[in-house]
View 1: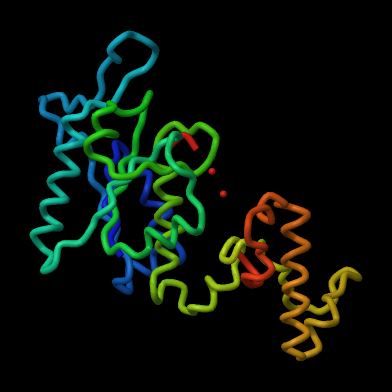
View 2: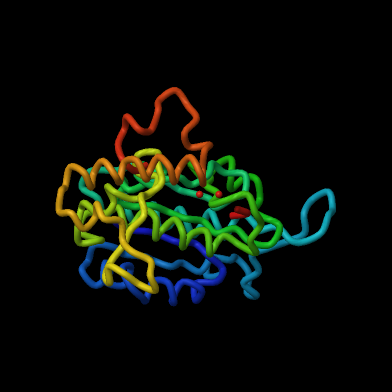
Length: 248
């Protein structure tokens, strides 16, 4: 899985990409993240990538030329290197985009190459939205200073669905939101801590009873914490035992 990130601040990605599961996935060749500094594509000696908004108003707007040039140069490289042309999503991280969900993550995980454009300042020139981006995604209804943090969330959320990234395919099948419900409570050793004990059924070794308990707990957790997930034409309980929203 290849992510191509277009940003004004590539150094922001070093921490998250250099630790834990994402680091191991890159070392194994299961994940590749290419960072492209949009300033490198600016058509002026001062590498200016923003300008005042037509019509006035506070803040600056990202210019279309360097963003188009950056993205199109990588799209051309990808298409030339592929024996069979594949669809490459060009995603603008935007507060106006569709909200990232587990379903959206699974949809994106089917692509071998994904492009992420990180907006900044007051946003990007509308022509980037209309004629370059094929999708807009938000990670929540709140405001960030730019699209970099949101892009990191997308990379983490989508990459972990790739084959071999988590080590066990079962890891993603029992998580919250996988099948419309929140995950059941989890326990580990010791069986008693400060007088708080692990539910007896989990110590029984009776797998059918454990599965039933987990299904019930998933329903209870979802009803208590996120009852909105239970609304809809299909009850999550019948789909399994398990089933979040930004500026940029």
